[in-house]
Image: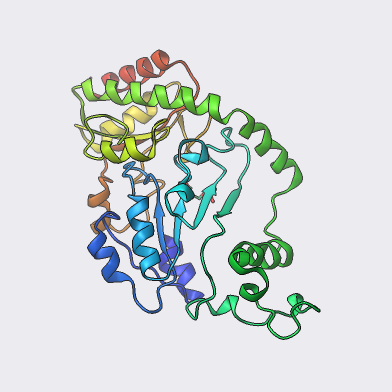
Amino acid sequence: MDEFETLFPKYGIHFDLVTDINDFDEVKSLIKVDTKAIYVESVANPTTAIADIETLARIAHAAGIPLIVDNTFSTSYLFKPIQFGADLVVYSSTKGINGHGNVVSGVIVDGGRFDWNSSRFPQFLENEFILKSETHPDNYSYAAVYGRQAFIKRIRMKYLRLMGAVLGPFDAYLELIGLETISERLNKEVATSLKIARYLQTNPHVKAVYYTGLPDSPQYPLAKKYFPKGIGTVLSFELAGTAEQTKRVIDAVRLFLYLPNVGDSRSLIVNPIKITHREVPEERRAASHITDQLLRLSIGLEDSDDLIHDLDQAIASAFK
Ligand SMILES: Cc1ncc(COP(=O)(O)O)c(C=O)c1O
């Protein structure tokens, strides 16, 4: 939130936020002449709400802007947004792509289909010192020289090469080791997430479970369409208790680490209102179920019965 409120506006980048990304009329109404993109999370943090990527891509393209998808929660193993019309996909590969929480990193994937040759994007139309060549003596902008690859070439040449936004070699090595096991990790973690979500639904001290991979979730049709292998390894639940009891659950778990990362091979727990979503204004929190009683889990590779037993004993001890 802080980046939307304070950092980006200093660079002239402003955001219109929507409460429900699948409220297509609202999304359309916010697209103005100076709008540059629609930016969505494929699976939202912490509610796991699913964005209808195909429809959003259609809306974006009708307006001449790209759809950018943050696909961090599901990873490229569970979902490939470009196949459904997204133009750019971004990942915090600190999370499930790496899977071990030992590297801070990011990935940008460009589908290479968006036409940047538009007055909406003047940065691709200006002649660039470095691109002047015998083949492009007069018109040597990113759009003229690279066509549909203009965006990713500009990212590489300006941000990677000039500004140094480069992953260190050892971090890249750790990422690649993590990536090798992505399918094994995610298959197990998704199965365990589903089992834990089902268990939580049966716990009398749990008021609500937020995991759109559950067949009784209102968004299950979208989950089936976009995520046949599962929506991911993060889920949230709301306790039917007090803020103090919620804190006691965090204190009582033995296997879950109290850590704001997601996608680790170790299971993690966090109270979003105090940590990951503390900057979200109060009026927006309610729409995302971010209350004092909300806990977010990121499911790792431990035995599923052990994790359920751990949650069970922690919740029981908080309500003693
Ligand atoms: C969905 C999502 N995208 C991006 C990020 C940013 O990740 P990083 O801290 O690796 O920059 C996070 C971090 O929590 C996230 O949850």
